Length: 100
Image (cartoon, one colour):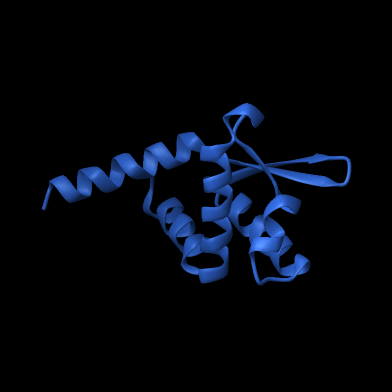
């Protein structure tokens, strides 16, 4: 992974509200094996002190950074963690840590 892509990922997660949203999606992903690891935004919106338009913006930023994928089902927006990207970033961070 190149440094520009890494910077885009970390920039997306640097906003506290966006990070909180990502962690809620990840939490739902971990808890939701029966749902295929997906998260309905409507289910977590009440947990956050952020308005719907702002959440929409943050979801767009997380999607642009390839951290999540989204799917529209009727009036609901379903989010999934991009496990491949998370594994790739984890591997890179582990390599950086082990070289210190």
